[in-house]
Structure formats: structure tokens, C-alpha cells
Image 1 (tube, rainbow, N blue to C red):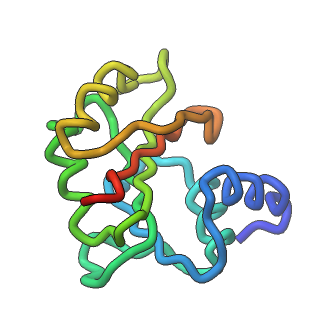
Image 2 (image 1 turned 180 degrees about the vertical axis):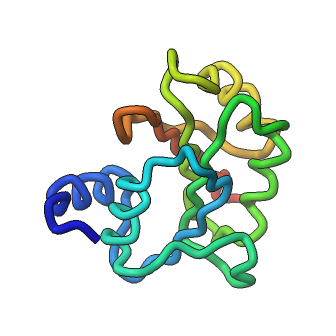
Length: 139
């Protein structure tokens, strides 16, 4: 964990609403993910990210998603498996203009089919955008 990114780490954690002690599940990891974002998330929660085999409830899910990854609706439904009620899904996708970018319209169409609402989209790094998706409280 690089001391030179401390300020950026804290900013990423704050922007994603992450706090120490939260359990964050990471799905969709591949060689192209932004490791500085991963480190920032781990610094914000003061723990390692957990994977899909975690087997317990999680406070938030980080889903790395590319246009070539398949069916977004299925992936979003799968993220709900371990997510605690009221938890957030952060869909991280390549920015528009980058290889495998995901159109905002694709996310807007997939989210409600999966039972989610799209709340906000922010640039999270040079190459990645983060979209916050939440399940209705009455789930």
C-alpha cells in the first residue's frame, strides 16, 4: 500500500461511501483493472477485498465490468447474492472512448431489470467510471 497515494486513497473511499470495517466484495477482476482503485478501497475499509467465494453478507460490491463481459443483467443479479439490505453495488466500467466501454444507456436499461436503481456516476480513475446501483429498500 503506497504511502504516496494516501490523499487519493481517502478521496476514492469517501467518494464511494466506504468506511473502515466494511466488507467489500470484488467481482469481475481481470488484468485490466486499476490497482490504485483497489488499493484505495482496501485502505478506506482497512481490510482486503473479498471475492465471490466469501460466503457471508457484504456491505458493498465492486463489480468491474466491460462491454465484452456478457450479460450485465445476469451479473447484476448475481451481485445481490451476498449484499446486505441497503448495501450498494459499484459498477466500475471503462470510460467512454476506452476499449470495452459500457454505454450509460446499457447500465440504465440493465439496472431496473435486475431490480436496482442507478443513483450516481463518477469518474473514479483515469480509465474507469463508477456507477452506484442500489436495491429498493423494500427488497
